Amino acid sequence: MNSVATASSSTSEFTLPDRFHTDRRSPWRWVFSHAVHNWHLWLMAITGSITNAVAAGWGPMLIGAAFNFIVSKPSDFHFLGQIAILIAISQGSRGVLQLMRNFGFELLAQRAERDVRDELYTSLLGKSMTFHSLQPVGDTMARATNDVREVNFMFSPGFNMVIGSLIFLVVPVVMAVQYHPSLVITPILFIIIYFILLRRYLRSLEPVTDEVRVSFGALNMRLAEALDGIEVVKGSAQEASEKERFAHNAMRFRDAAVRQGDIEARFLPFLVLSIAYAFGLLHAILLYRQGLLRVGDVVGYFGLLLMLDFPTFSSIWAYSRIALGLAGARRILEVINRENNLDQNAAGFKGPMRGEIEFDAVSFSYSANSAAAGGALVIPGYTDEGARHPVPPRDLVRPLEPIETDAPNDSLAGLSFKVPAGKTVAIVGQTGSGKTTLARLVNRTYDVNAGGVRVDGVDVRDWNLETLRRGISIIEQDIFLFSSTIAENIAFGQPGATQEQIEAAARAAQAHEFIMTFQDGYQTVVGERGVTLSGGQRQRIALARAFLTDPRILILDDSTSAIDSATEDRIQRAIYQAAKGRTTLIITHRLSQIRWADQIVVLRQGRISAIGTHDELLKSSEAYRRIFAGA
Figure 1: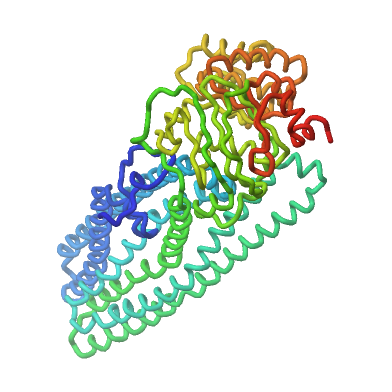
Figure 2: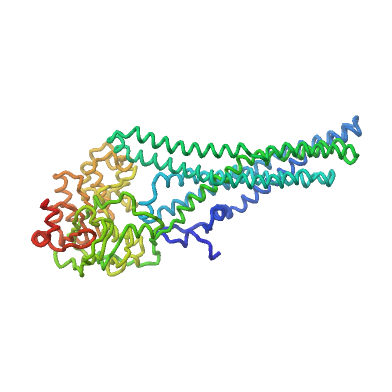
């Protein structure tokens, strides 16, 4: 099993103990590796399928025996009564056996859905930001909901009907021999032709079911984007154009579904089944005329042929369910197997963090990073806009030789400087100069393409990722809050925090006062992404969240951009107190924050343009003067 890719052995930022070793080499292997550990359910379901089919075959044979007895002894009803009892018992037991089959497959389906959903969600949590920046949320949601559900349907009714119907194909062959050996010709010929036609059917169905799943993903993706950006849509009066785009995607999905229905409607085994009935009955009558069969044998044999009805009619939708489930599994596995260039490094360094940061000849490109993670393009729509973080005096930042080569706006080239533990550094530069990118390399949101970022002298790639990120707190301009209570949002990074600790953090972030104006106080539920709060309120809650985790490295990315001047003064004092004793990086254009930084790093086109204090840079750096003098 060395060649089997397992969840526990794959590269990932985050993993959970893997309950099952899943084989990710193909959708078939992966689906069955989720189902195979439920062997007792398979045993129950398949046993129910076999015994149900056998009991179904006994029915027509017993009826045929009754016909023979009536013809030979029409006045003796005692034996007919025994046959009636046997028919009642055999067919009555089919209810229990069908329940056994259906319950087994349904439980298999539900457990497979649960396990697939767990594996996919764990995989998504473990993917790097490169992956999440490239992967549309709507398409991911379609895979995590509808595609996972199709895997469920693949087992029940899919495999349930298919396995049951296959056994129904075998029973007439086995039991027809009891009447006459030549009577197996019709069911055997039907089975051969059935599987030839079924193979052609599945081949024509596979690309269509793939298109059904892909078009649904595109439909869901556009819907999610439109709803997420509804304010932009309405503000630009683009409702009509969005409706047209959605209608186009809906039409694509409908067309794919219609093509699937067209293929299903031309399912040729229906025609072959009718021919098999006619040929089989004619064959049995000829044997009867030759004296080789009795009337009851003809009746019983034709009853066995009628069992071919179930596999034929169930195939038209049972195999479609399997094809759709396999298409869904293929899409889910595609996401799980997407290459991830970050590893949680569970065996990495876990020592206490002091907070010293060093950039050593660091180069980074989103284009190269996305290609390494399986993407083909630069992260769509990414800009460095909104990248501002907090930091503070002089011989702290130690520049090495700046690289004199320009880098694209999405890149960093040859950055080298050092921030001693407990100091504050401000990172400034024009939009697109790489400020936010620089900050995201510290906690390994992304990995460098060349050079190294070290924390306390240890390369961040050699740190245990969880330990590294627990020691670093980033507050960005675009604050994300969960649709839960204010207290739960503040305590997100420290779930076991007490109410007293939560309130202390909120007071430090100047948030306690406005929180208490709400009717439910800290138990107030904020809307999705915190839409019920103002920008300033969201940022203060994010500050409280950071204060509560007590990080050794604090990164503020323009975190006071949406705060009024009066509130900013209070928050500036809170940040100044919070920055004492911990390393702080501040990305900002606000002079009030830059002035109290120990050092200022000026970025231009992805490289270091100048380093110094505010007064020094006003004298020596043209780029710095342009930022603050409007030149």
